[in-house]
Length: 415
Ligand SMILES: [Ca+2]
Ligand SMILES: [Ca+2]
Ligand SMILES: [Ca+2]
Ligand SMILES: [Ca+2]
Image 1 (tube, protein in one colour):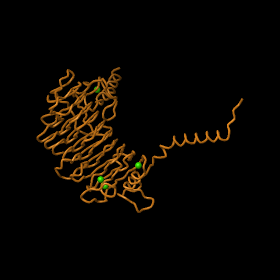
Image 2 (cartoon, rainbow, N blue to C red; image 1 turned 30 degrees about the vertical axis):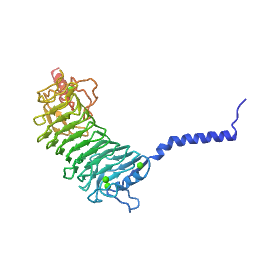
Image 3 (cartoon, rainbow, N blue to C red; image 1 turned 180 degrees about the horizontal axis):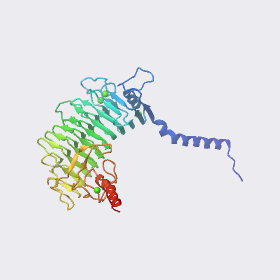
Image 4 (cartoon, rainbow, N blue to C red; image 1 turned 45 degrees about the vertical axis):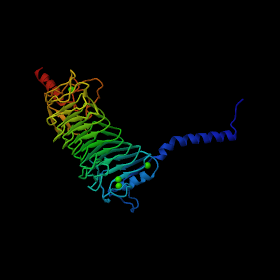
């Protein structure tokens, strides 16, 4: 006997299917996209125009995930703040305040989309407990007031911040000695991930480039360079879990702290180059606080003033590290100590960030490990090149590529 749907059963099936469709599309319906079409700070009174501050207002007021498209252009903050700072996105820094939902801001590229703090205030102030992602933009010329909990370019709350192909440069905290003047470029208080990005020429009392006072920080295929601080770390200060991979820490300086990185938590450094950092009266390269742990693998720590490392807590070498003196405690048989790495100047060698190329004859060439290594160097070039993996953030290929056609040409000409 063939069962036939009753009218009531048919209606139930329709309602069920409609509910399924609604549930499937509901998350999509909750996400809004706003495209900025005016470079002014705000354009509240102009119909049809969306400025960056307006787009953040829309995202803040929409209780759901949002995406802001920020086309090429220079967006200069101009809504001046009172001396005490402001947290409702009306003036000064751009306050991201939808605490329970994600926000994604997509620029046209770090050379095309520029958000400029104009020396008024920090640039972005993030209160979200969820994830804020920024890509393809430069964030520059922020200046957080002293005593306002840090973050000259970006300050975060307890959520996640992801920077991808972003340049954070020339941001600072106004001159002061407040204990919380942390993070000239980025002041992280949650989980921070920096990928393919540059943190350069920022300044703070504590942590010139980056300060991690949150639960973790990860730096991947990125360069932290030319940042300055007074008492903690020129490049990066981190109190908790820290992972630095395929990255360059170069040319940072501190008055009395560590020039490069000061670590207070559990830190791991892999395939990274730490060089040319300096401190007037502290450690020049990496300082591992007595409360910290540091494991280093396949990395160069060299030519940082007169002491590459300080280690109130011992540093663990996981092998294949290179130092030009012998202050880091690299005692694995595969480590290379008291050896000049022969680094070229920090410059554009391809990829989104500056790197230190290896000069011919560098002891880092082909001296690295292939065990649990990443398939690319900081620039995104495939590893290994030549006879093996190189130590540090840069894999040298060019000599070999020049030689092959020369050898082929030589063989042909002699046949
Ligand atoms: Ca929202
Ligand atoms: Ca604020
Ligand atoms: Ca503000
Ligand atoms: Ca190699």
